[in-house]
Length: 180
Image (spheres, one colour):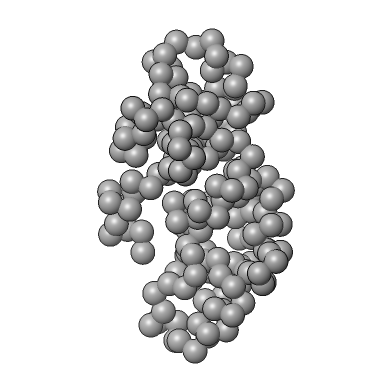
């Protein structure tokens, strides 16, 4: 487990800023202590300094994970967010989409969100902006990218895609063997 390099930090923060903007500061400067990001086996973990100090007592080859996995770096050094980061990012999300109850299951199976399944969308959402997807009961379901702006969503036909699927909490079941 090691600290992220400058390039890795930049790549990860650029990805996070698509969803939470400048609220990234709130993840690190927390009132309940100091938190940090660490890299282990191409995965980025978010943890408190107390847990980090305890984890140093375990050898690297025996350590499976520590803290919360925020995502992983691919072989091409791109950062991919995991759904395990959803609970930390959802409160700070700048752009949100709410899905109707009838379309929740479709989204959780890995499908895009159609206009007919869109409940609400944050005002002034730009096209290709990262969004956090919620149920109508404000339960975070996953991440996506807005396919249309808020204004375009009002005018398109019901079968148009309004949010491209990226990750959802259904991945725990669909791909549990590759998450760790």
